[in-house]
Amino acid sequence: MAQKFLKIRGIDPLLFRDGRPFTADEGGLTARSLPLPFPTTIAAFVRSQIGRRAGWDWSDINVLRRAHTIPVDAPLLQANGAILLPAPIDAMFAGESNIPVRLTPQETKKYRTDIPDGLWPVMPAAQDEVTAKASSHGSFWTRQAMMDWLEEKPMTEIPRFDGLPEEERIGIQINRKTRGAEESRLYAVNLRGFEEVRRDAGGIRAWNEYALVARTNMPDEAGVESVGTLGGERRMTSMEMVDDTPEIWPRCPSSLKERLGSAKRVRMILATPAHFAAGWKPAWIDSSGLGESNGPPGVANVKLQLVGAVVNRRIPMSGWRMRQGENGPRAIKWLAPAGSVYFFIVESGDPAALWRDGWLQPMSDIEQDRRDGLGLALWGTW
Image (tube, rainbow, N blue to C red; front, side, top):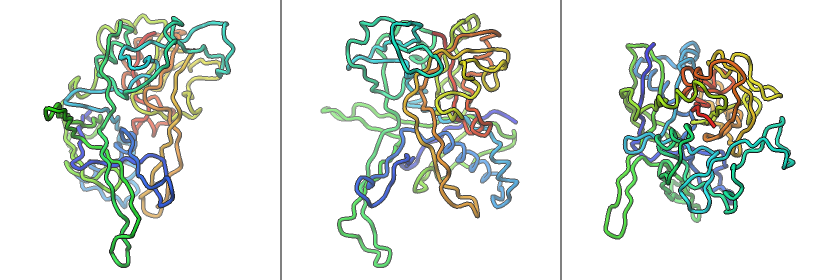
């Protein structure tokens, strides 16, 4: 098996439906699209393209089982050839400021809270930093800004991005019998494009190109079909193999490796949504906040104690089973969103294992969820 990297771009604007209903009822007349597809959506697309190229018989249950064993880590967003990463939730912005304020666990008895499991409250170290109303505009950071944040470097103003550009299209319902338009039956579809033109008074200001990046393991001789359909409405999408470079898949900087090697306090930031059995918290963290002796999934010889977490509202992930004889909706999984941050104290072991074995590796509890790329993690200090 060889590690391969793939770049995915919509030929058409794509639809990645969220969990809200799309019906003729009031409030349901718009099909809304996620800023990025779920990791499972990209995993299924990559496996399909591998199988199409190899000529697999999808009616064979053994082929389906084989396809599900192919690990796919995705998606990371690329803009104009540079990787963007989900904004960490432990960064707070006051008003329109572009300089982030750090949130860290504060071991204090000044406040009475309902935080579960005896965790410490997460807040700015200096109380004067929260006098202004906080805002979190901007969903993605540049790779360099994220690496600086993980290393606790002083931060200046940072550029922030909103992900794949939105494009709304208006349609009208067609009567299936007459094939004519239904009166007063308008609906909207919110799509995500891969090209963006920004214009000012003088004309074009910027031309931006976006792509999604995936990492997978496949047989050395295997390939992928270059064109297929992805997301809702089966819209055309291209995929190509690319070389492994930092612009395709971020490396852990040498300075961060050094910090992690001797760190007593570490944090985990989710680069993709994660599925945990306990909801917001990984199953390898017990009720006392301690992790198992073998640490996070795939990371050996390090024991961590959870002391704080910043997790946004859970997000639902569902879908539709297309397998023969199983047509129907999938059960909802509730995910911890990308950008969620978990603060740990290193109890014992070698914290350097976190970057050696855990850098951009999936941290979800269930093995199949990890194969689907749910819960890719970045590690830093605090």
